Length: 120
Ligand code: AMP
Ligand code: ZN
Image 1 (cartoon, rainbow, N blue to C red):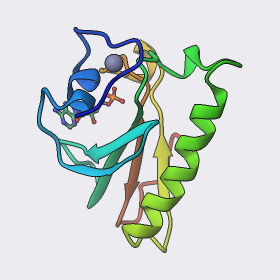
Image 2: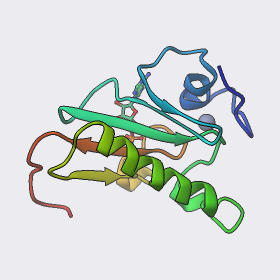
Image 3: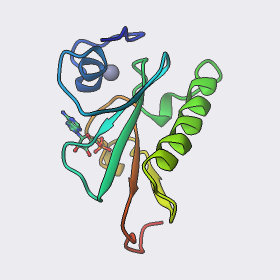
């Protein structure tokens, strides 16, 4: 499907971006890819990932900050397209204490229901 900068052959999301593992695509451009989470935690649960293997928020830096900024523009567009007019949550788990299970930077978009209060 697409090339991944710094493709990691052991990375699930690199394989999804490349099309080697199927996914329910929501959006794609030259820089990022969005697809539905396989285990949704809300009526709308979408993951947005860069088309570059960046491990987590901890690896965001001056060289890739424009890419991350672009992803947030895409997040706003996807949320609008999905009709999340009453709000939504954007989450990025970073590292073991946060419960990150896939070490490729991703942003969860969660919406379509009133979120539980707590944590944030
Ligand atoms: P995190 O725990 O923040 O690293 O989030 C990883 C997310 O990836 C979880 O919400 C999983 O349900 C989701 N996930 C794992 N495998 C797949 C897959 N093959 N397709 C779509 N989502 C997946
Ligand atoms: Zn990756």
